[in-house]
Structures are given as C-alpha cells and as structure tokens.
Image 1 (cartoon, helix red, strand yellow):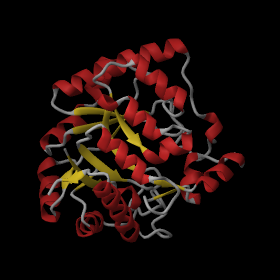
Image 2: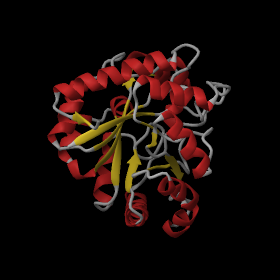
Image 3: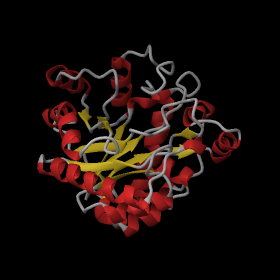
Length: 299
C-alpha cells in the first residue's frame, strides 16, 4: 500500500478567476512544485495540451501528470454525447500515463459565477437523481474500460454537495463511479469525510486535501456571498493552517488500504498566500500525519 503526494496548480494560477495569478509563468508552478517535493501535478488551464510538449516540461521538473478536472454536462446531454465530448481530455491523460479521470457536473453549477450566492446551489429531484446516476455510470464504465479510474468530484455549488446529495449519488451510481474525496468541500458542506471513507472504501478513487476557515465561510454565506467570494475571503487554506484533523483523515485512508494520489489543493489569492510557502506547509503536514498513520509514501 503506497501513496504519492501531488499538488494542484490552482494555488498559483486560478482558472476560475484569472485575476488570481494569471500572470504567473507555468514554469514557476512546475519549479515550485518539484522543489517543494511533490511527485506530481494536476492539469491546469495554462498547461499545453500537446502531450509531447507537456511530457518534456514535466520530465524536466521530475513530475508526473496526476490527472485533471473535467467539466461534465450530463444534465443537458446524453452519456453518449458526453463520451464524445471528453475524448480530447481522455486522450491527453492516456498519453501522459495518468491513472485517474476527475469528473464534476457543471452544467448548472454556480461555483464559477460570482454573482450567484451559495443559496442558489442547484438540487436534483428523485427522478433527476436516477437519470443522472445512470448516465454517470455509463460514462464511468467507459472510462474504466480505457484504463483510468473515474473519480467524481463533489463540490460546493454543484448538485453533489451536501451529505444527502452524496448519499443519493452513491445509491444511484454503479461501483465504477469512484469519488474524489475533497476534505475542504466536505467540511464546509457538513459531510463527515472520515465516515464516508470508512463506509465506502471501494469508491475512494482520489483525494484532494485542503483546510478550511469555517468562520470566513459562515460570514460569506450569511452575507449572501458566492463561492468565489469565499475563495477571495480566504475560506480555504492548506492542511496545517486550518481546523481539520488530518490525522483522522490519514488513519481512515490507512484503514481502507488506500493506494493512490493525495493532492494538496487550496485555492487562495497568491498575492496574499504565497503558493510555495503554503505548499511546503501542506505537504509537510500530510507527510507527517501519513507516516503516523502508517501510510507509506512511494519512493
């Protein structure tokens, strides 16, 4: 049982808000990630989509491409149409040797719109869950047949957000539909992440680790703010700088014999939260807690 630590480029360059780090060179992201000690990096908007070019860049920095977020639209198109639409993303991941396909439904999501408050988060009715689950299962089974693990990302401002959403999601999808468990989104949505990991070990396909500042989140929600308002206010930070118990998270992962990537991902304003310094803190925190929990890092 081994794990590998990677990082998301969102701490350096925020694709949802280009004003946050948009002028940062990609080489800075890759150099920092490598020098901090990460083994891999997730895909970002500035990354070249030519696999030969991207491969040379990552090899130069000693990094693997972990995978990358894919924005799905299964509430507005068929599974067959979604499979056709995801082909360029899938081809890049396969060419780069990535083993995980991170999927999130964004056709009606609000997390990228600063004008829409948390209260506008979309919900599905029972019939909607059934059709959504069937379509997700079909797409996930296809991805699995291509040699990658399908890892659905629950996320604030989307249809899979709250504990009841995740319960419905697990009931209507097949075993091939794995989860990207995200500690920060879970905490702010009221999801008991440790219980989720322990109750559904076969579904845990990928792990994102961010910490939270609960008071900041609560003030943004109370004031009618949006997800992006929360990001700007600092509701997220890296492990070791917030309130979450990462010892408990790592023990839960060890308890299910988790094997795969653990990603530091904390969207903050890089002008206020230096990505390199915070990346170092996040990685050191996770490495310490993983070692204590007997999660062995791949050498």
